[in-house]
Structure formats: structure tokens, C-alpha cells
Image (cartoon, rainbow, N blue to C red; front, side, top):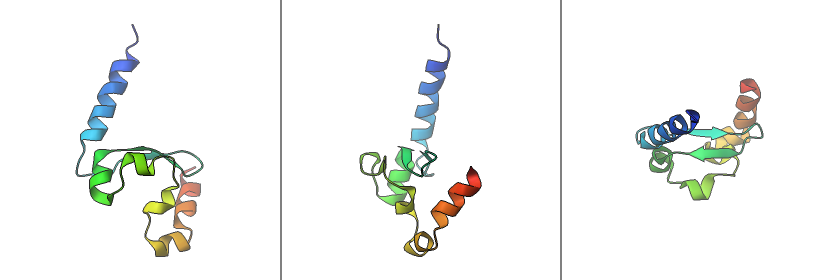
Length: 77
């Protein structure tokens, strides 16, 4: 029996149910890989619209112009 599958399902349900928090994951290239319901409520972007796109899209324009998304990504790696 694969115990990881039920845990993954529970975790996905837990993350998506957080409506007061924007929870998302990015890959090492700065592309959004997952997007929860709270992120949709707080930003207006649906998962269908945003997954696969660059995380810089959710930053304020001034931060994107200062390359804040790239600097934060580099610090995280």
C-alpha cells in the first residue's frame, strides 16, 4: 500500500482550503507550478490563468522593475 498517496491528497485539500492565504509553488526557473483557491481570491488570477507563467506577474510593477522576483528566487536557491 502506498501511504504517500493519501497524504498527498490530504495535503492538496488542506492547501486549497486555505481561503485567507495565497499559497503557491514555483519551480527553480520562477514559473508558478501550483496555485490555491486563496491565491485566486486575493489576486483575481485563477490557477488556469497563472500556472506555468512567471511569478513576476504577481509582483507590483515597481518591484518587478527592480528585479525583486529574480533576487528573491536567487536568495531562496
